[in-house]
Length: 464
Image 1 (spheres, helix red, strand yellow):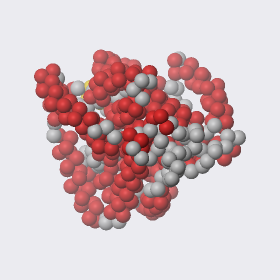
Image 2 (image 1 turned 90 degrees about the vertical axis):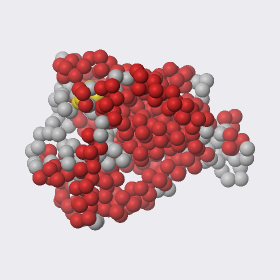
Image 3 (image 1 turned 180 degrees about the horizontal axis):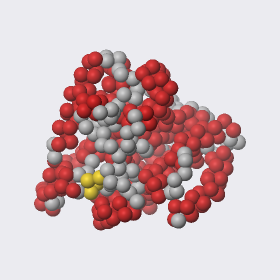
Image 4 (image 1 turned 45 degrees about the horizontal axis):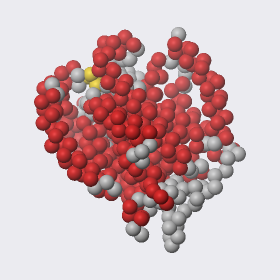
């Protein structure tokens, strides 16, 4: 009954949103950022065909709105110098997917590249400073809700969550020793933990640049809750990514963070050993997951040698799972994290838990080279933007994006990060939003009046 009532309310809300997006398409991307983390809650709505495709429909509608909207931005274009490599990767991957799987290869193409359309939308309708500021507020708000809900899930327990409508081995999962892995409003622990990781890095960077804002003070109070919420997901890659992101911020902007990180490690390690139950520590330090991955990587290595130009887009990962579920009628709740040889023997696609290996399997060394070039260039571009924009707020947004990119690059060693919804959405959205930040004009030291904040220039610019 609650789900039906919510669905009835969605109709006028959707109509209002469609009109608002028509008037200003950037609102469509902000709405996408707000709603995608709640995709996991869709199971509580009535079973209506195609309702799960709302996010794709929103992206396509927003793209169409950029052509018909009466709003005309003062300028168009975004700063993404790595776009040629992305275009080549999309073309190369699409051809490989269609050759390997025919028409159904479109599923793999959609999973891998659909949300790069956000860059096209932002190229036509770039974000303004206010849009980026609203995006930071959205990330903090959604992150806070998820952290609190994730901690509450520990109190509810697995059985109660199943009674509420969640499902074992899909949303509800446990780690070694029966420890529940919180998932918040997402459908799995991985996107939940990675989203909180990104929240801490992006909002943290902006908050440090604007310490007197109310949002920054709220964030400071929420940091322990965000970290605790991330911990109960039991996703070690999220913590490693967070540390790498903090290191990037420390190197490019806040040197004191390097000393703080070292001090935190010295204090936190003994505290964790004393306060955290041994069963929980055993879960975090267990090598079973690594051994499972290693077995699969060995099989992947043999596959790469046998197919040096790749086995085609959709040969592994989430795209392959969707192909298998649709063509082989494999139930979605079948566990797919098993070693590669057994997976293919029973018709279940191999999940490499490493995005770089996934690219190697599907597109070979050429695809991996293109992908790494995109990531490295994106990281360098965001750092360059942070150092060469006059607004302190815009500079911190760029540095926060750089930290999030570095964290994603790190997490990709232990997860197919760019296939985990909505982290793929946020990755391209943040890069596009960052690419719309104006730079200082050479020889003038200023940009347009809407983006200049001379009173809050980064220290390196004040010295120029």
